[in-house]
Image (cartoon, rainbow, N blue to C red; front, side, top):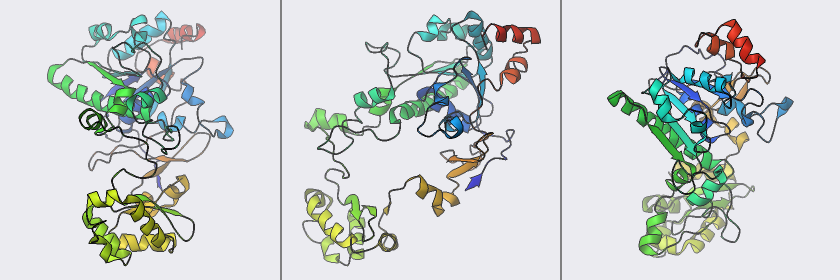
Length: 407
């Protein structure tokens, strides 16, 4: 596992000429900031001085009272505090944004406007500023003002309905998918908008709605219904009319996923099984035929796979060119040789927890890769460096702001 505890903050990175001011909290906005920071952007996270981002407290496991989610979602960022409900706090943000490239926020529509930080007002002081706004339902439309968490966006966007087993209610995927998708699309939109700034010199609003980010993932679900009258349903472990693509048992109790639904790949699977005749059997010879006879084919494969241990099964499948693999948990990822060889998981120094493991930056760039330079900061850790060093505030100004609870 790679150790990035000694990563130099000054190493040239592809976005190291960008300054991002992040006003959001929880996940939908901050994950966008994390993605930009992973590739070198100077992300200045502005937090409430009294409470900070609630993500500092979130997560199932909190050794020594420390969130294990915060070091990841706030990695590569600098933290300052400012009470945005006060005029002086709002003025600090304006001063930060006067020389910034991007503002990321995920408050309800209208919140920035109430604080005197509307995009139109910000463009008066910095016309090049890209304002990235992540919300549940977008900046316009009849639902815009509603509170919108990721789970609601997942439900409206379609992913919840088709997730899970057909005989049970819709299931959650196990991660905050809606928030992360909205943030990923927000990051994409931000980079597109920055490209346009280079052409025109003018910033714009990037409006990323959670439900629309989820909807963008839904493949042909809409035209299937509109054109063909087909409503996708929950199908559990299988893909409808796509076979074989399922989880199969082994002699030692493991479950192995095998995906051999393409004609050429199915022929290879039939050879590995010692049943080459299956590839020419009219019930299984074509993609459509295998889909129509999915249950029968899955039974045949399961009868074969359960006679072999997982290691032997995978060795045969991989040697035969058949896509297959275990369903990984965290322990599997930490022990896997491929994860290690590609440094997919790294260890980063934490001031209280020591080196902690987390996922590395994705995607990989061949010449200017991203890097995790530091874990999420302490609340207000960079007040001095940014307010004094960047904005030039005096000792008296800083003392007054602290005394009045503004920072």
